[in-house]
Length: 73
Image (cartoon, rainbow, N blue to C red; front, side, top):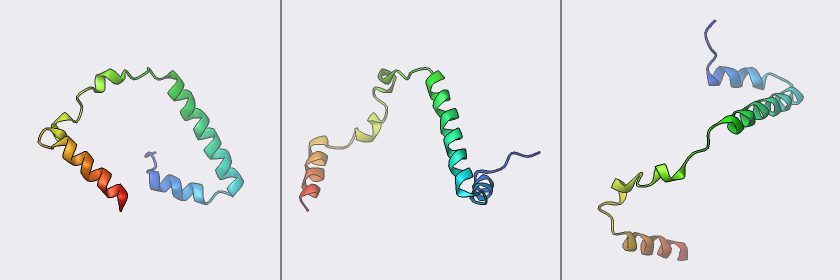
């Protein structure tokens, strides 16, 4: 039996009564929360430098001033 797609699952869920939809959401959240608790923590230091190439040719001060100026409008 093929695995249902996300859209097929949503269509099936929408056919359920609202009380059953809420129960399903609750159970899915509980299962996902348990998986997050069991997951290994992420070392944020491993993300150092990620995306640095995006800023390599950008004047950061000019960019920040432009962003701050946009807040005034």
